[in-house]
Image (cartoon, rainbow, N blue to C red; front, side):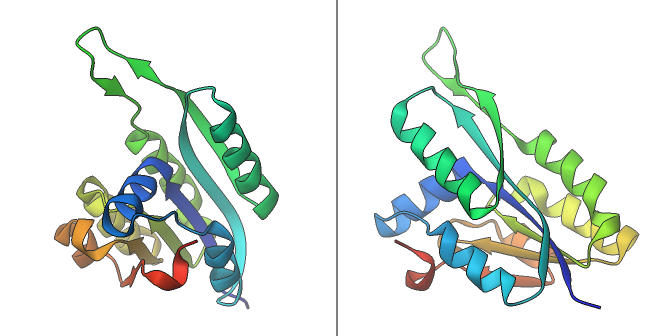
Length: 158
């Protein structure tokens, strides 16, 4: 039986870490091609913030054309000037719901808050958690919780 893969992308995290580390954008088509070679992608969710601008709409449509389900939250500007747009709980719920039906969970994020989630699904569902992230901007706790850490490098950038 083929390796069943579920993919979860923390879009804001990947955008900012690849921009800060490389000054370039992540190439989701290259990722899809790589993962497709490792098994059957049965679910692929990209979690993003909706600012309603045209560039983001084009990006979201590109993700959809690749095969991702794009989940959006509104961009919230607080009165103090800070912004809110966090998908951690939504990603966690979706991972927990899908982990029992797959062999591999692929998480694209550097956020250490997900380390407990990966530890939990590894023990509870006997899945292989894989993390893709920019090494210098990925929490060590997340790297350690994954069964496999795949460093985002030149080969996965535009």
